[in-house]
Image (cartoon, rainbow, N blue to C red; front, side):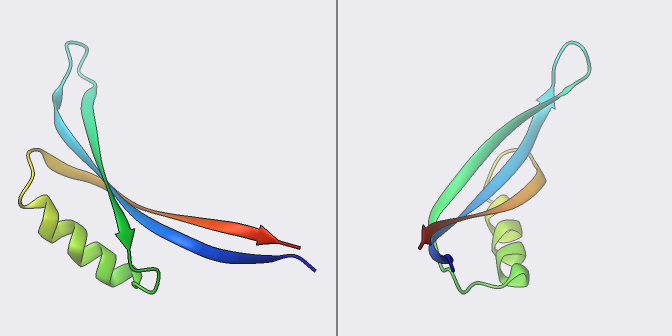
Length: 72
């Protein structure tokens, strides 16, 4: 049976920095690598909001991106 081995976690913050001529939001993203794999959803949410206070734009979305190696 195959197994998945969690290799790394990244935190992606998406900011709305304005609106284009057609009224669509302009989004910019920042990705933070080397996030602790053991971090809980609440911890990541709190960190994202703390970091967003130091950035331009309104925080639009927070994503957690995990990468895993599939072992046979």
